Image (cartoon, rainbow, N blue to C red; front, side, top):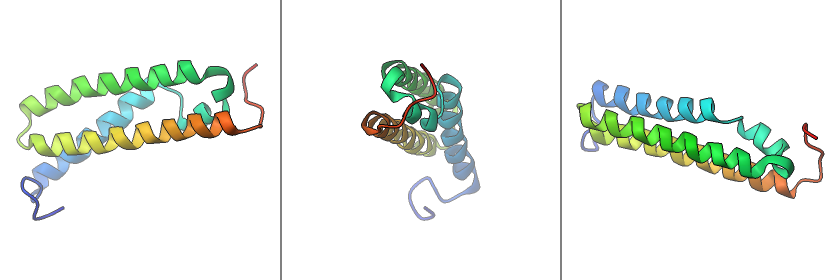
Length: 108
């Protein structure tokens, strides 16, 4: 990403990576893994997705605070936004695949 405004130095790289790690960590703390979501979608998809959205909301709050104090706020937004999009896509796919599967889940 070197050469894009605000992304050409080490400080922006650290802020970008930190924001991404933050989102992944918060969503993971609030949810089961996408694998577990897929395995148990038939029984718990609403509950699992509720926690995905709650975790994403928590990550957004931390991201907004980071944007206010960061030297490179655009890097924070880019890192957090990319991580959030990837995690949401992972859980959405897990839900869809789990609901379409005929395999038994791990919960009764």
